[in-house]
Image (cartoon, rainbow, N blue to C red):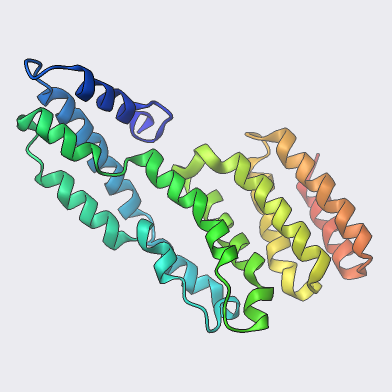
Length: 234
């Protein structure tokens, strides 16, 4: 899995080999390796819950009258199954031609980029009502939580923590305690889980969030923040 999900530029290496090696070079072994990497990658994502199904099951009233299917199409199980079938049907013995076909398919880093772009698209896609627009940041936060809970997206976990904190600060400024309570609790849980991996980022998030909470002057929000901070442990 480190080769499949790591930062190793296997796709770039394969592209370089394809462009620099002449017809006399046999690239069948490289095509076989890259095909295996793609298949393992697709199998991993297909074992995860379909992101659209996950999102709609949790979005509830935040998505009333608002559809997200088009935004999730690129990372849907339907699309991934199509990619997997295409990769499986490539005959790696064809060497150069096989490698060229395989390189047209998205690898792990390509899928990570799609996940990375999706939260902003959820924010930008407004609904038909004022309430839908008001909860755009909530929809974005919801999917950021999904990213943090997906092991295969570890490459973008630290920046996602920062984005979650930024989004929660926006909610603290404009929404009621009842509307943001679950987001506050989930954020603290994620910070606690990731504090060993990203100690500076996690503690900085709590500090900045705390400043905004006290500025708001909502006693229930302050009480909840202090309680979660004590439970966090330092």
